[in-house]
Image 1 (cartoon, helix red, strand yellow):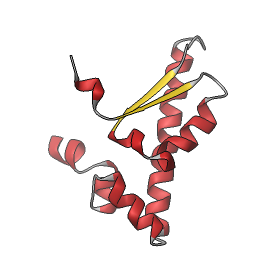
Image 2 (tube, rainbow, N blue to C red):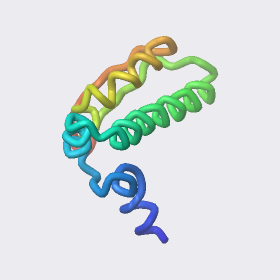
Image 3 (cartoon, rainbow, N blue to C red):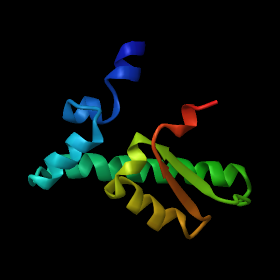
Length: 100
């Protein structure tokens, strides 16, 4: 069950890949389902950010998007558009969060 949830969820479960670049290729080739999945994932991230900002009682200095997904403006753009109304959004693509 842990493998099912941690390795086979998200876009992997829907599109058969965990690579957003591959998902973007599917979108570029007109795959409407891939568009729905990626857009829905961005919307879900917005909802989670909103929940955390509510927990902070609206006092957020900013939101940082990082990791491999942050390379995709298709993914980060809708998040920025929605969340910038609440707090500034900073995008730092890459796996730099893993450096100590």
